Length: 263
Image 1: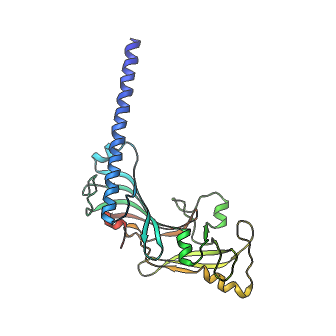
Image 2 (image 1 turned 45 degrees about the vertical axis):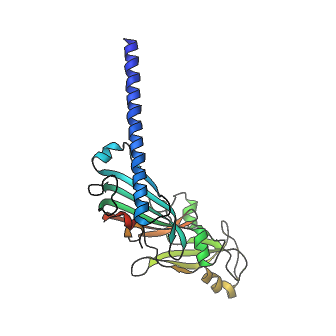
């Protein structure tokens, strides 16, 4: 009897492993199909990273409904700034029309959609003319280990720390910066310097009064044509790591794959 039980247990374990393997393989193939579909629909130069979250996969596919899908496309050509990363997280995704193969022009109802543009400090520094630019979250948020003010870890938009060497000054300076969104289509990132920062965790460089305006102006900028994936209206902007991030969160949207990369 003991041998029978051991044999049955082994057989059940093997069956569970086999089922899990099939489910995993099907999920990987579906992610590949979506990645290829996004690339073709948006003319990306490489397949984006795609993750269909929550296990198991096959029950989600059978009911034409994914619980959560992530799409991340690095090094995407972007007007004005050069290269950015585009991200989208879709919650409760209805595949009735698109199917698991994601037909490019099919409508995709989404209960909640998070959309982001991630601008690296290197590219932002080139745009501003500050080649060694470093971006940090506001000091109060980096000190209290909260990890940011949004669910995705993005800081608030006020009091960010920009550090770099402005043209004509010759020394690294830290400046407090506020971020905002402007323009009739909510696609212009406005960078507004508010003051020189000194002390711990800054460049600790004073600026003479006669040069203060010029130094602050070097950190000022307006970056248009930053449209979020799927046309989501921005709801927050801030820093995460050394990146500047524009994020929009919307409920009850219907999208198509070509809209992942607005033109």
